[in-house]
Length: 203
Length: 203
Image (cartoon, rainbow over all chains, first blue to last red; front, top):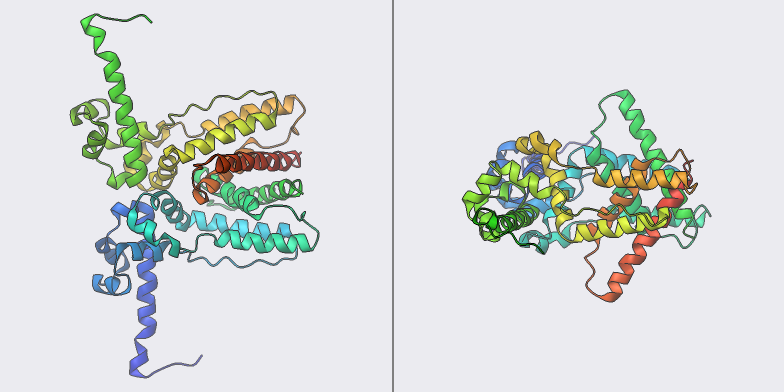
């Protein structure tokens, strides 16, 4: 652990924290209140930072919201050796993200961005299809190993997995006990088995 | 066509129209702007009705929003004779509802209601699980006919069908040409085949 102690760089790690706190607060405000309910004032208050430092980093509200909904969760590119193992890992991560509130911000962005000019203009900056990219990689490896037919569609597999988990996360509450966590794990496994069977029939 | 011409009842059909116009406008405003962006003023303006007639029908903003997001589309309980035919009909109807803007209002309600006290209090009034009820009926008939294994889960089938279509509707634009309509129909059929294969493997 090398430490930088020159005065010029001493402030930087602190600045990094300000940015992260601000984005977490902006994600929370946007998830709870949406575009019209989100303000620099409220984000600055919840993050405990000055409004001017928000304006410096994100000159417009659209910049701030876009940065806030850009996935903070980097889904690990699971490589367990089987399609089933990879999709279960991805599914668990997606469900956890939905229940963390990050998923609500994403849902809301999907609902609002077509109707808000500023968001629509900037929306192309958001790395939307992260999940689809991961599913593509998982499916490609599965086809190479002969686990999936060459003709199956990664987009359909992604819709069935990610869409079903969205629907499940909306209908079910985040698990709070060991029993409900086990139930949630069992759900993901059941879903992945069904998705694989569905994809295999596509050949 | 019998016409009622007594003065007392002559106004009623017109009132009915006011209510429908108001709900359509409220659904549109809520879909575009969410809870914080929805006001009686804006709804009255878009519907071309007086604010007082809105307050008479829906005394609180929560009442108005809840009435607006209660599904206007009554999904016909398809009974084509096969699980495949029934799920394709339901899938087409769900996709059309998503693209009509009604789906956006529902998405937004799912995202906002956990965070807005007034909506949370009244949310139990919304008939959420209409789709699940229909899927339950379709699955029950499929099991009776021997098309599906007795152990398959209607909730999982509903998540895979309705969730995938939600994910698809968010990623893809509503079709505007005959070619893109054909592509959308082909997508629903491919999805339903995959969902049935997945459900059949559950046995």
